[in-house]
Length: 155
Image (cartoon, rainbow, N blue to C red; front, side):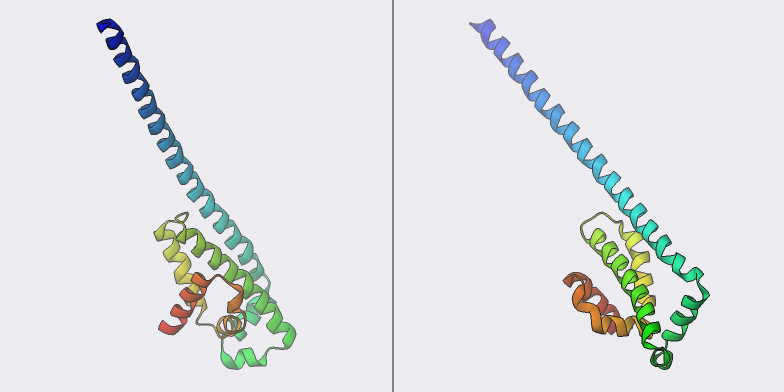
């Protein structure tokens, strides 16, 4: 009977050790998966930014964006030119919104987000960006809208 109790205790101890080992393994897997997700998120955002930047190879686009950066320049653009700049601006705001969302759920490192936020803040100095935002802000997530509105207020 004493030997049965010892055997039972050893089996219970081995069972607890197996549970602890399993929990440690699961914890390591979750941690590794989170790290891989953060890396993939940064790669995805970088790829989107590179693709968007290709628009600026076209000198006509560059000229429209530069002219549209000032109130007088924006007013001087035709409706078609304003639409073209607006489409580029929409793509940029979608990238910033995605970066903000990924940061807010922990998939984007704070240092990397700081770079995205700085780019957003700089872009909001352009008249076309503020005009776009004043007309299209309702298409974006509430948290992102609050961020952009605060950046506009503080600039």
